[in-house]
Length: 156
Image (cartoon, rainbow, N blue to C red; front, side, top):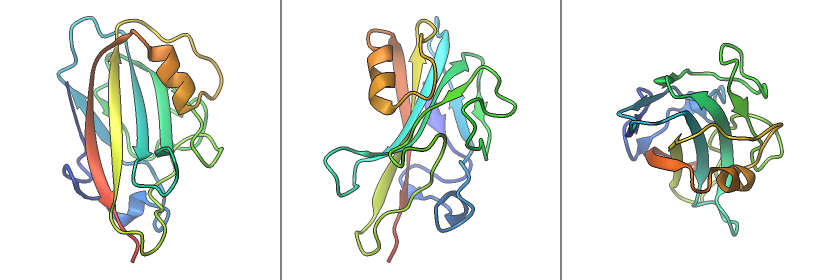
């Protein structure tokens, strides 16, 4: 399984347009080489460099059909994203639904943003805006594979 983004290379800076300092739209994510038996996909984007006890959650997206090869740019903030009728967006650390881009504290150094995609052996049984911990609990024992692309961002 592999995950890439045409917006940035692995461990390279995320363009400003995908951050709080820009348009704050989600970057496109490409998914490939999923394992046989994949029934559904889920994505979690977080920042383990955030100055809190747990990684700062920027995006939770699940219930993606196994045929999903591209998560498009600018998914939006709707629980059910436009053009993705089966997908379900969850809660980020801000307490809102959908994508919120990088926004590290100024002068805190380079932060690493992990866009992790999970291939699941069966559809998730989740409803409503689910958070990261609830999603991880729901996926327990169902993950066939996972892959990630990591982008960086720094505010000086």
